[in-house]
Amino acid sequence: MKYLIDGYNLLHAMGVLGGRLGPEGLAKARLGLLGLLRGALKEDASSVTVVFDAAGAPPGLVDDQECQGIHVRFAINQDQADDLIELMIRESSAPKQLAVVSDDRRIRKAAQRRGCKAVRCDDFLEDLARGRHRQRSTGATSAEKIPAAKNESEFWLQEFAHLDDDKEMKELFQPFDFGQTSTES
Image 1 (cartoon, rainbow, N blue to C red):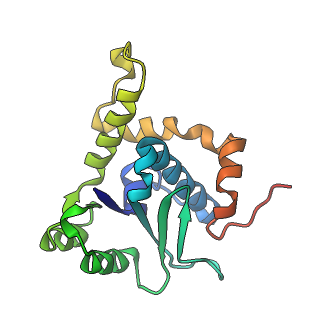
Image 2: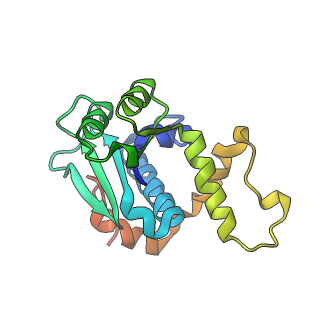
């Protein structure tokens, strides 16, 4: 199964985009999401395409790139990511093998019209959490199990809070700064 993910929509569902973040905050949120996907999907990360809006993007932003095996697209030549996602759904050569992750009704309908699997963001996050949970030790207590949906945003924020300070993650994603200028020496 290939995944086509509405990036900011998924970040919003995770509770990451609740307030104003600014360009640096958005870049960190994108990197955190890509790290989550890479970590949760492991070798299947190569089957993922994440699409982000690019309104107000800095000059020179590359609209199509790969980050640790995850295909990343920015909707530079479209009004919004939804337009690019719909185009990608229409152009898919195997729509029945494509899962489209978004809470946007327009995107979900476009996916269903083409025979794609339309997946809500919360459902996708629950599936990721279950997969991550299975990889943990078998002696997990009930407190370590997947949180209830209302606490899921807090769970994901805590799960990836350390990424800001993780030197290896910074080095790993440094070539893929998505238009953010590096402040490190």
